[in-house]
Length: 323
Image 1: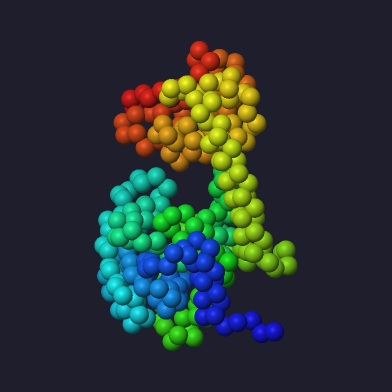
Image 2: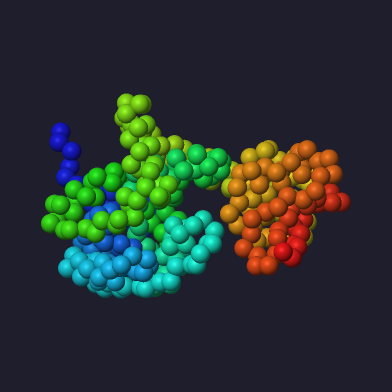
């Protein structure tokens, strides 16, 4: 049997997603960059439900305003009930995670403000998921970072995580649409671009194909395991909590994965950000290998302060020190 056309594949993916996660109906928003993934998703979404296109103009490239306006016109032509261009200011030099992370932070904040309570459809594909898993693997950040993107992480919706990137391009061709091709997506200075252009094709060649699909399946398996551990940690947290501290003896009774999930949740609640697996395991050793050692420095968003996890009197506490 012939494989369905690209548009039919996208309709099926979005329809299945909507039945599972958004059965109540109503409108939705779609984050539209003008690229093939989000443009094809917008075309399909607008035929299913009332759709508002949200176009974020980062202002980082010459002509970005024209690109945004073209995407807005395309969205309206495709049947969107509304299309909004949202200019943003991307964080300055020195932003944690570099320019890509700064642009992503600004984009998600703008989408969250403009969505008007509607769920937001994002055009991430199976290829994006595979790249995310490889990035997590290479950084050694633990299973959580290799679990990839969730299909439904309200208000964010990713209905195309089971669809290859090539399909969205074919769908645009079927519709006679000309998508914008972001020059950043072919700029080898970006790690994700090199993964896409060099690493994944090499893996496909060496391993005989199917690597992107295998990585996406790996993300699903790891995410299921992580979600189970998080649920167990949620149950264990009250019994391990002593005010704003953690009871070392209670933590020692927990299995390693659950204990580290409790520690991670506690660190985040206390202002920890950008946590790595190395940091969490270092804090864990304050429980499992306690020898009177000093505190563990934790990444945080506290301005003018450093955050440390320390142990004393049988408790784990967070200590803040001025920089």
